[in-house]
Image 1 (cartoon, one colour):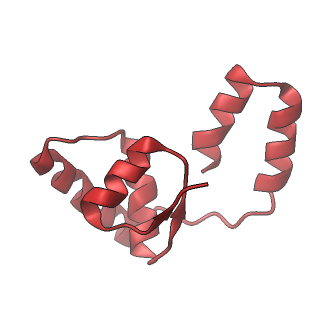
Image 2 (tube, rainbow, N blue to C red):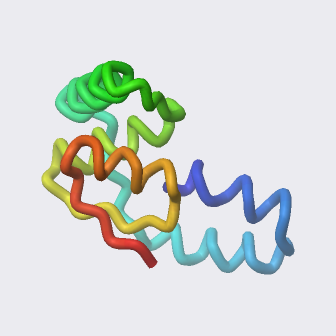
Length: 94
């Protein structure tokens, strides 16, 4: 999640917002891309390919982590929403 959000803050927004985000992110639990999550990501990638709707690797990996842990993904990303719709991932928009 930090990898997804931080570049946008660093590039397009103020350093104050980036600093505030780092403070919040330091208190979050990071979930690993372990073997189970990587397998789920591979399955998602294959399914999206069959559907003719490929997405960025990082989005697919995030979705794989969420699915592997049976987590609800909280995002405002249109690509993650499309992935969620395609593979049955629970997603809440913010």
